[in-house]
Length: 144
Image (cartoon, rainbow, N blue to C red; front, side, top):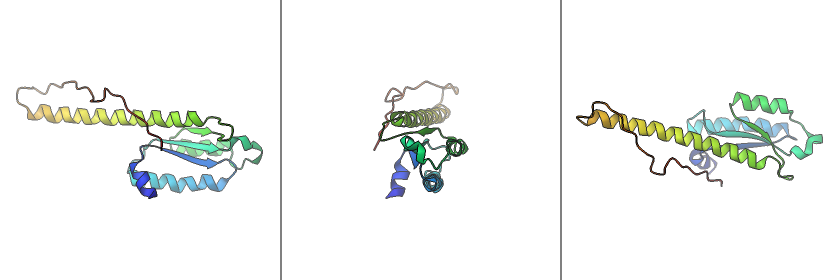
């Protein structure tokens, strides 16, 4: 079931507890699994260190978490679900990444269609036509 979610997911919030080094370590395996299943090292990701309201119990330093996020080329947020701090920002960042990736993928597909169409149609002279996306370039972000 987990692999099915990974295969169909467009982006991922990888959440660990700042009070548990083990939870950060477990993200490495999770991220590797996502990259393997998606067959894409550039899948939209956001790293989230939760429980920032428990600063006195911190086991994972900000610099360690930031180092992991940089090695994965992913943004890092510290959140507190209890205090509702930075939660929205992490989701918004992920949604923006998903939308950017979706738009880039659509543009590549449209260009490939135009290239194939221009080569196969006589009288076009290789001229490229602009096409509008069916949805006007708008995309959605669904959070489950």
